[in-house]
Image 1 (cartoon, rainbow over the protein chains, first blue to last red):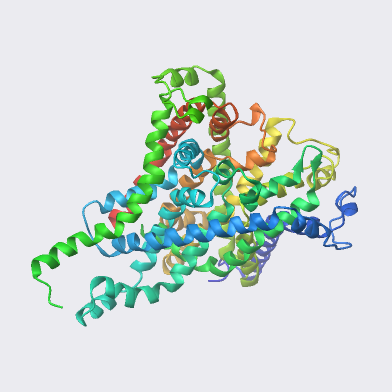
Image 2: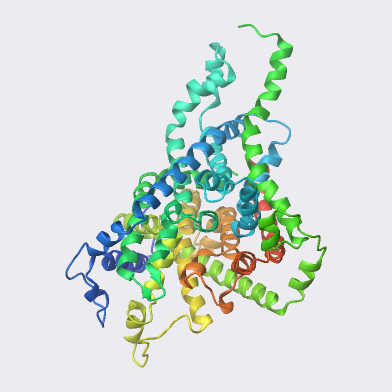
Length: 284
Length: 305
């Protein structure tokens, strides 16, 4: 599929050139904020505050990264973000895969209701749930603790995990399981031996996506975690804004560091997630 | 090895419920219970005192709702949130559809570049995106002021974008749309690839113009996806919080309150948890209107499956 069929060759060519130019222009506009973040993170303070601003890189420096990495709670915040992310993924994958298997392979009373709940959850604005979640965790003595945050993250990660995995499981031909069961496997045995290995790419994609969601969350972590050294990187970014003004060099270096792992993971699984989302959206 | 048939049948019937039990329990605990609690809370008078003493908050009946609903400011915030949502969703969808259509006709290299940029932007955490846009629109050293000042007759040096809420919301809309376009555009692109090529070719052979082609061939195929993405965007934008919170340095002025921010501040800054809960309940109810469209679309698709 290339090119819109035009009426004549010159017109078609001109059109394609215009489309390409438009595409390049759009890419440049979309990418500019990212470029500016990186540029600010790597240029000395004098150039950050240059007037007029210089659009091209001049001197490069690592001073902002050194300052960001040297901030007293940085590594503790990295640890929090990683533990919360991994914990959320493990719990939601563990229990989500089972539910996804049930939804993809069994018909049972209440199946439709569960599907509706899982889809409906995405419509509850998280901001509306902050108060009762806070009260719930404070009753359970789980405020300012990482397990508490992981539990609350299940609200938005678990339904999503179930939904994505359901699609991946449904894509595995059911005949494979039936063959295994004819050979003497139990239903769960067939799932474990036949479906699960085929599901590996789907599991990886789903867990990366869940990890990213947990990594990016801000409000709940902000409300639930009061100790500086337990807070996540999203909250740590706010520490570059003080009453004396904002340290933009440090902020952009911090933003780069926060975004880096997500960007790498995302680039790795994007294609698969895109396909999964589209299949989910198109096929219901 | 041989199971008595009756036991096997019972097991088969019970198995799916065992499989979904952990998920159902988890959702009941972290979602069902808080939702019920939210509604209860909105009928009570929970303040900081009850929170810390653990005493049961007094029953307030409809008092919270009465005071919220009779407050002119609440309706201002509702109107502002609705307007903000409409602007963001329309901008996101129009731009995304154009981008997705554009990506079908550009050269392979350009398409790869566009995909790469979209994925990179998609991967940006919300707080990172908000930080970047705050810096871009900075009054003293922001590059936006400088770029706009290049337009003849426009002098924006030292211009503070957040002094006037309309301009401030323009920046916030910018960051929201920037963050939402990748998801919407790539999902629409995936849907566009479902348009049968033979159908499009046949329509062109029959003399259809590009506009007619879009209306009668392309749009019917991508419509379900477009409706889904639109309603998802609307839900997200209606509850937007992070971008405003960060751009206003954790202390948004009253002019910057949207429903999410308003409910949060009533609860955690003013410690009127019940008033905050009432606002949150009203927000969820308003969202249900949009939710009905979304769920109906999904059920409709499910029935066709």
